[in-house]
Length: 628
Image (cartoon, rainbow, N blue to C red; front, side, top):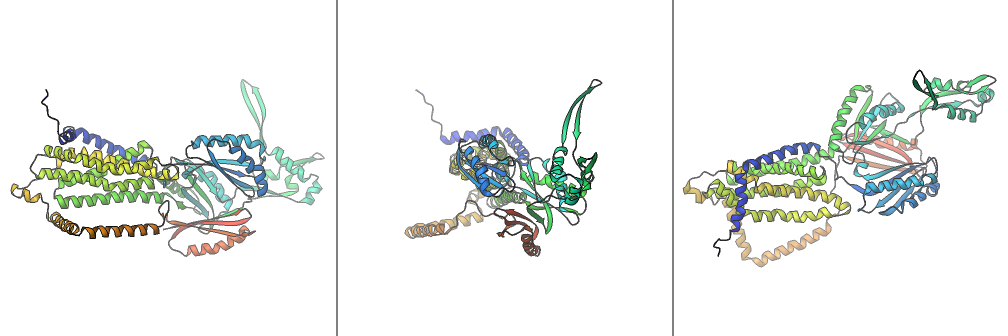
C-alpha cells in the first residue's frame, strides 16, 4: 500500500516560481535578446493608416476617346459584364459608362483569393478584347488601401510654362520617386506633354500640289523606326535600322512630303511648325499656380513612414538640383497621421510607466519593487512587436489601438505579482521562498484574469468582411500583448525579484507596516466605511444600480453610430460641380474666388486644385487643403 501523500496544488504551482529562480539567468537573457530583436522589428514593420487587406473587388477602367456614353455601354461595358459573370466567386458587377470612359467593378465574395480572381478577370478581358473597339484601352486594378495615394507632391514655377513642368516631373522626378523601396506607382496629374503643331496654309498647299491626305500619309509612313535587315561582313553581323523619327522643329519643317517634277515638297513650303501643349480636359493648380501633381502610391506591403522618410530626403536633394524658380511642396501627406498615431501609443505607454512608478513607490516605498514592475511594461510591448512581425501585422490604427488598450492589463499583472512578492518579503521569509509562495498563490487568478479578455477578443479574429479586416488586427495585437504580459509576469518578474527586491524593516514595526502606509490605510478605512453603508441599505443600492442601468440604455439609444471613429488628418476637401456645359476656363475663373479665400486663412499650409470635365460635359473641381 502506498503511503505517499497527494501534492498540494499551491506546491505544484510553486514549481514555476522555483523554475524561474533556478533558470533566472537564462530567462533574463532570452528576454533581453527578444527585446533587442524587437528593435529590428520596430524599424521593419510596415506602417499605414488601416490594416493591410485585399478587398474582394477588381476595377476595370476603359478609355475610348470621346465616344458617347450610350455607345460605350453597347460596345464596351456590356460585353465586359457578360464575360465577367461566369468567373468563380463573382457576386455583383456594376458599370458606370461615360463619354469616352467607363468603369466596371467586379465584386467577389470574401472567401476568394483575390489575386487569383484578378488573373481570371485579366484572362476574360483578353478573350473579350477582339470584340472591343480597336481604339479602346483598358487597365485592371485590385482594390486595396494602397490603391489610394499616400503622399502628394506639387511642382510649380513662376516663370516656366506647364509643359516644362510636366517634362521635369515625368523624366526627372517620377523615376527618382519610383526607385524608393515600397513605392508602387507615381501618377502625374495636370500638366501637358509637348507636341508639335503643323499649321497648313491651304492656298500654298494647293499651289505646291500635295493634298492633306498626302501630308498625313507621309507622316504615318515615315515618322517611325524599323529594321532594314542584317548585313554580314568581316566575320561580324550588323543589324541595320532605318530611323525616320522627327525630333525637333527643324526636322519637321524639312520633312519631305511629296516629290513633284523631281523636286521634294517640304513641310516648310506650305506650313509652319510650332511647339505647343497637347489638348487636355483638366486644369490643376497648387497654391494658386498652375502645377503638376505627383501622387505616390505604396505597394500593398509598403511602409508609409519609411516611404515618406525617403521621399523627403529625395525632395531635399532635388531642391538643390532643380532650378531656383521651381518649387516642390507636399499637398497631402498621410504619414503625418500615421506618425501621430505611433506617437500617441508611445505616449500612452510612457504615461502608464510614470503612473505605475508613482503608484508602486507611493504604496510600497521600495525602489527595487518599483523597478521590477516598471521594466516588465516596456518588455511586454517590445516582445509584442516581435509577434506582430512574425504574423505579418503592421503598424496601423487598429494594432496600435490594441497595444494601447492592453497597457492597462499589462500594468495590472506586473503590479499584482510585485505586490504579492513584496508582501511575502515583508512577513520575514527569504526572497526565494517569497517568490515561490507568491507564484503559487497568484498563478490561477492571474491566468484567469488575463485569459478573460483574451477569450473575449479572440472571436474577433474570425470575423469576415470589412469588419473582420479591421477587428482582426485589433484582436491579434491585443492578444499578443496580454499573453506576453502573462508569461513575463510569471517568469521574468520572479527572476528579477530574486536579485533586486528586498524589504528591510524593524521586526517591532513589521506587523504595523503590513497594514500599509498612511495613504493605503486611509483608503482601506474609506472603502470599509462605504461598504458598511452599502450593505446597511441594500435595497437602496440595488435601486440606484437599476436607475443607472435604465439611464445607460437611454443614452445608448441616443449615441451616434459609425464604423470607425472620426479622424482628423489635418486637411479638408472642397468639391464643386458647375452647371452642364460650363467651360473649364469659366469654372477656373469662379474657383479663383475660392482660392482667394483659402489664401486668407493663416492656418492653411498648402492646397491644390484639380478641375476636370466629366460626363455629361460638366465641370467638376476638387480642392484639397492641408492645415498647419
